[in-house]
Amino acid sequence: IKCQKPPLCYDFGGVETFLNSKATQQQLGVSKKWSSCNRIVNMAFQKDWMRNYHTKLPDMLAGDIKVLIYAGDVDYICNWLGNKKWTMALEWPHKADFNAAADQPYIVGGKQVGRIRASSGFHFMQVYQAGHMVPMDQPEAALAMLNDFMDGKLEKQAVQAGACTGAADPSGPMPKCYAGTEEVMGMKETVEVKVTSFAHGGGMLDFKASGFKSFACNSKPFTKEGQEISGDYGSCAPTGVTVEDVKYCSDSDTISATVKAEGIPVTSTLSRSDCPSAGELVI
Image (cartoon, rainbow, N blue to C red; front, side):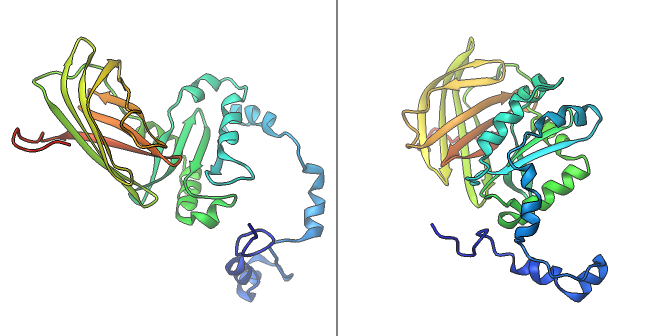
């Protein structure tokens, strides 16, 4: 596929106009023409090509210097899976804490734009629907990410987002119904769960998703261990769609569930809702 705007496949026209304006150059104290690609400058960095710098991070973290690694999830040059894998393989004193941390939704303007994992000053961000240059593809998300990182809010957001607390079993009469809606990059998903029975660590439930991907799993057996609710949804979910990380948070009496489609996870928090009456049809 040829680039619409060679050589970098991104249109830096606006940046070039801004940096070459007289007013901007006066403020910066420069007078030369700025361009997005300069071969002489590029050649000066060739000694840095394919060098490993991750070994410097443990000392930086030990010195209380915060570190953020981020990647767009459609970047084919520096793919996010490989980036995440090396952050989790990094040897440093808090490796176990970082690896045990959950990937939490990152919300900007009421929408989930990525996932953040953080512990002890080390952060990894997966940015949805962004390529090699995240700010060009998702400028609002990139700006929020940078500001939150500099303000020390990214790790706090990750901890607060993961505040699913309490591992007690659901109590009281059944059925119990829960519903929630979440939107990620314009893809809205509503998830409904109806727990029809529960006793001795297991029970039956109905799981329904509608919106970006729609399907229904009725009368599915499940088991509960701690917060984790495990069940087989593969037989009723469409091809390429999975249900992951279903948890019951007893302190808030809510359910957290992730529907993943086309590689994009949509995590919803389901609050208690009214169950349909006996005369209503449940599908």
